[in-house]
Image 1 (tube, rainbow, N blue to C red):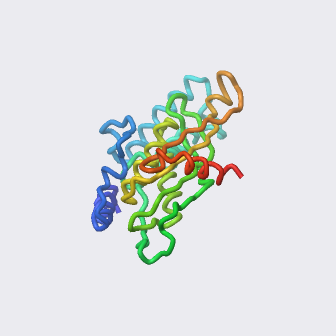
Image 2: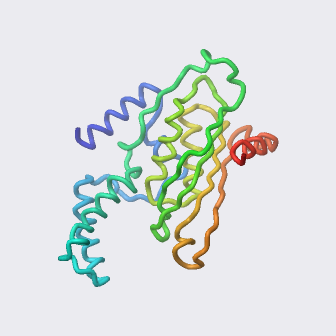
Image 3: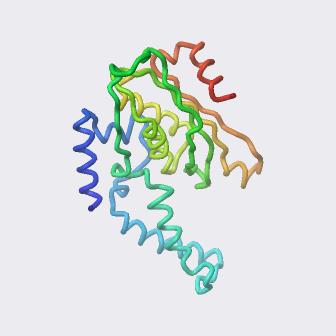
Length: 229
């Protein structure tokens, strides 16, 4: 199936759930993309391979050597198909929901902790790795548990700032869940700090509290206690 066909399929799928793919994937905190993000993956891989080959040659690597001969194509495929796969709408996960009316005790928040975050800092293009913790108050529907992980992974798979990543996850969840009450907490280690510059090990923490969670400090304390154990 072509990339265009995949996008149309996702648009149709989200429309059935009264969701708009542009709003779900762009959020109110858009990443700094240009129109080139819509070019085919095949073209991107070809161009990145060409330019990364030039970079390696400038560094003085012998690309006739068996060890590095295929590095340009390996790197280009890794960028497009893996590390930065969340830059395109067709990678947005299919979502499943359960009617909250069929579930008891929906007046309490739902918590999910320790979701793996593997992203790339857009400043130095080095990894930032850690965990995400999420809570939301159901409003008519409950999302499939694995879909929370997939939404986090989708927004992480692009050049990112941790602060923007936190808000994109929160904004998307608020939209697709139809609730203002969302909390997102990220605890990440940045390899641009670990491998260069100060060369130290530290964690950066960012959070987003929306709706009633923003004013409810007792909830925030309870939320943070749940994943600090």
